[in-house]
Image (cartoon, rainbow, N blue to C red; front, top):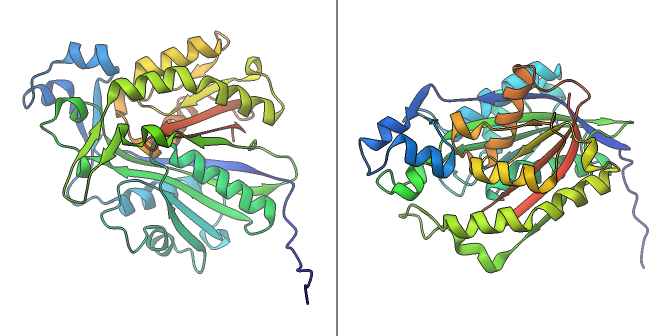
Amino acid sequence: MTRRLSARAGAPGARILGFGDYRPRRIVTNEEISQRVDTDDEWIRTRVGIAERRFAGDDESVVDMSVAAAGKALATSGVLAQDIDTVIVATCTPPAPIPGLAPEVAHRLGIASAGAFDLNAACAGFCYGLASAADAIRSGSSQNALVIGAEKLTDWTDQDDRGTCIIFGDGAGAAVVTATDSPGIGPVVWGSDGEKSRAISVADRSSFMEMDGRAVYRWATTQLADSAHRACKLAGVDISDIDVFVPHQANLRIVDSMVRTLKLRDDVAVARDIVTSGNTSSASIPLALTAMIERGEVKTGDTALLLGFGAGLTFAGQVIICP
């Protein structure tokens, strides 16, 4: 006999209450890197726009950074740890496949019995996590969610490979998401191009990251603008309504190319955290947006377009109202 199941009533929408970040103390300049590989400050700035990046210490783990960023996000949001019922950690650099990092992160934050899981969509991970949290809230599976993007890319980067060692850094960013009657997170536009899945890859557990930078650059600068426009349309806004643009911080040239292609207003606040943080994969969007908020570049109520993209090749974008 087929029975009709009951469904839990969800909220009309979800919104972000607060962001938090964690940046390791060690700053690694281009000059320091040039002492190890054949490069210099001008070469690095010209090609990727990076002046410095942060490296986590040997005693700093992805969990440690996640807890630090999430604690700050909780404090900013005003939500108590015991009121969080879902914890999502977006990362592509866990030290091991199991156990997942999210349960330990939840435990260390004093969050009891929450649903907790890791998510790997590489550099699009935070946007995937944010969409998952918002959908869980709208479906009634969650009321308050903690979404974290955290990476220790230095564990997976060959520091003698000029093509990658100049780019990647470590860090974590987090956001607290809650149910609301007035939606503050628009529908996600996400997808993938598996034909190019080997453009960024780690061959096996004993290998370092390899990247076809030219292929990624061409893909990002020619294929993603349509996704940004679709995210705006689904959220019921026009690209001219965007106040803040926060793309994944992969390369400053990619960021600037996207700004031109999208024809953003001249007064739009654009994230360029890549200059001082390097590419931090799934952590880059919350890291950049937290810094912009703290510097006063972003105001409460601003309309922001987030666009994550990276290995897979995966991408995800959504429009949010800034807390």
